[in-house]
Image (cartoon, rainbow, N blue to C red):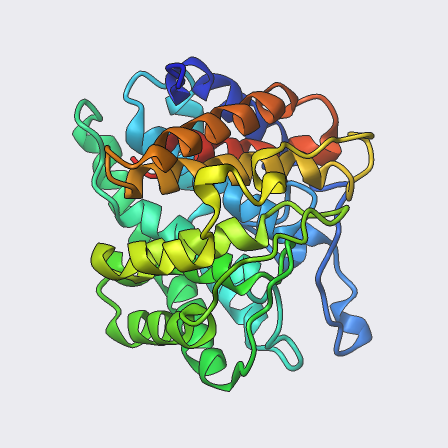
Amino acid sequence: MRARSAEGVIDHFVAVVLSHIGREYPNKLDHVMNSAAEVKGPRELHPIFYGSFDWHSCVHGYWLLVRALRLYPALGQATEVKQILQSSFTPENVAKETQYLAQPLRGTFERPYGWAWLLKLAAELHAPAADGVDQSTAQSLTQWGQTLAPLSRAFAQRFVAFLPKATYPIRVGTHNNTAFAIALSLDYARSVQDQPLTEALTSKARQWYLADANYPAWEPDGSDFQSPGLVEVECMRRVLPSGEFLPWFDRFLPNLAEQQPKTLFTPAFVSDRTDGQITHLDGLNLSRAWCWRAIASALPESDPRRTLARKAYQTHLDAALPHVSGDYMGEHWLATFAMLALTEPA
């Protein structure tokens, strides 16, 4: 696998996010209005997460900024990023975002994708700063995590209430995918030692996915930005101890050593990057790269599938990384998935 790291592109990723994190329009709201008084614009409804075309993209744009600030001491835009985080993550703004959730008929707001990304953002704020990050920045990250805590807890509580009544998993390659939501949310549950949430997530993953075998790989669909199969693998890699994960993985993708299913090794073709649904396929290539990287990390050095996973990682990354910026339909979110692919697992 060719050497590839985030250092060479991190400033570009951050610049892309800074260009849209405060861009209010165009905007695609997920907003149930209970009366005419709730006919409001994005910034009034969501004082933190009003930019980046939609609420969840704004959330994971902030995640990218926090991750860049936490991991890269030489970040060129560190001062600007800190100013934005300081002005956004205030008790007043967090209270308003939290109050929004409490209104009638908003129980399914951003479920589960936005829930998971908000918790992923909170987990990033709880993670230790990298060596070389100054003490002031590290303290600020902790402070912002504490400020965001009421909103984080609100989404954690929603998961704990929702999962016991969620009879079936959702296996699509778009926002409703439940394996992706569990994978990201576990980072938060473990970072803050939230045992009820950890138990709810891991027990549901076992219930939904533990018996799965011989994944048929009927993918991609035309608007996928996740691989239903590979993201399930990533979910179970996080849920199961290694001794249990590897036998499960062997059953789930039994012909991987023969590079089957072939579609999982073949980057998706993107015909029109100005089409918001078709350009999802760039995200599919990036999220597959993220999953292949994780698979490689989980396999023993002597396992020939490890080399195949590394090659598939690079192939998918090369297919999508040049297209992180260019048209706003992809630009408002693709850098996040590129950051996942380049930096997770560490």
